Image (cartoon, rainbow over all chains, first blue to last red; front, side):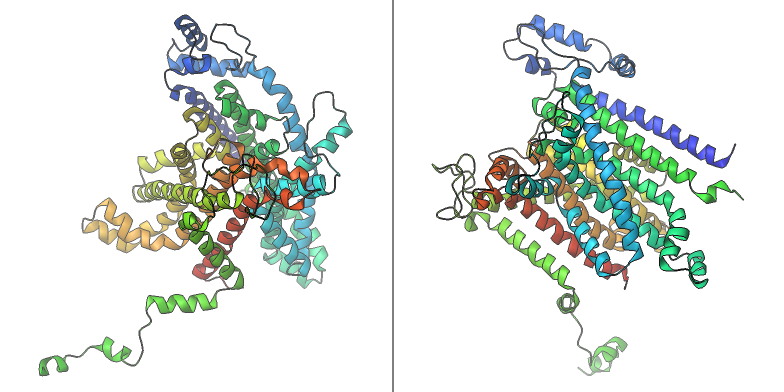
Length: 326
Length: 304
């Protein structure tokens, strides 16, 4: 088999294994709950029969490994279980399936992440390449200083500064990003502008610095020196000789930072009261609604692992040293 | 008497005309050469430590002392006004330094105790132990730490002790990776082999042979890890699942006063109130980054 294919298959296998272990950890979290949590969910007034029925519904009368495989099987079929909230001590069950809660919010979060990526990736590439092109100029220094500052700031600080200037002092954008399924596309973009801008500021800094470092690293290679000696201009050297070889590290950087978005999105959604999956997760953590927390964590973890996996695979495929084995 | 005058020491002769530099002298020379950013960082850190340690004497009012006017404007009795139930913002900021920074510091130390000792043990004992810890760490690092922390907090509930333990364990994975990576290079040295041959135990080899030789990267990592832990705890408190009221803490202060930002048009100072604790967090992070940058530059010997 071709060595590239072998490495990619190995990496994919490792990724699937990680997914299984992670799903196991997230499942096991429910095992760590204290014994009387059925009582805690249903309230003090719940009768023993209701608590027993609730425990049976969760399958707590069966061994853990059977429940794990049932849970994985259900998740693979798109059944994420039933929410804890809406259950009353009297046994009246108004709880909703987790999937129903998660699906519309996941769509909103993907919209926000997609919009951020559409702004952040081209911007970061442009800044990274131009700062490498005009290295050590005032432009380079000021962009570097600005990005270093935004890296050190917590996300909510950046968010509130933007709200102060763009929503409160100069009311250009709404400070609350309340959208629902009926919101029109352009209105949606207008309302999502501030959260997307906050996330952009946070991830552009990382992406731009890594792009710049990748190109500058390549500029030390002998073939760049050769190109310079033939009389090529700085612009020509970077665009024609360095950039084609920098695509692999840059693609890795982009995938890696999109994975970072997964975490950033939680805080930003809460700041702007954006109805996304991050806010749902925080609300469920506060009310200790474990099935919803599990579902959200599983979605976040899968996205994170998949993006990192893609980054690795791109890195392997585009590495010319692996394409021509000795 | 004559006996002592006849003993000869090459060291005494060589250094007789040279005043020996004490550790204090060396520190002073080093500080004199430090760049502006590092000095700024050190001054800021020192100020935070002073405020945190002497909080009860500096703060004008108590941590949870409630006054009759909620959302009082700046100036007058309350320099930065009062919050939603009438507690003095300035006093809570000062106590917040103690709580937020103190908890982040304790968490970082715990993370280093766990991560560094496991990392050293794995580097020395390159067998099943290394494999087992390394693979477990790989899995833990596959889940974003903020998400994992949220899952664990939903199970164990939000208390300060739970918060410290959960964040410390999650962050110790990064410390483990770094410690193991740098220690592996030191473990193969001859003097470690010599210590093993003369029968020293695992603890001695870890503390006396390896640790002193991997200190610089670990110290720098401590600074960066502290920033990361500090930001994570601030984010969790901001989300309402970290440090719980009535404990004063910068992350939750931002959340509690966030609605004031809507009034910035009418009273700019009121609009700035929620930004104060957020700025305090950002300033400390920047300061620590500056100092770590300079420290790394100094110890690695990289010159521009």
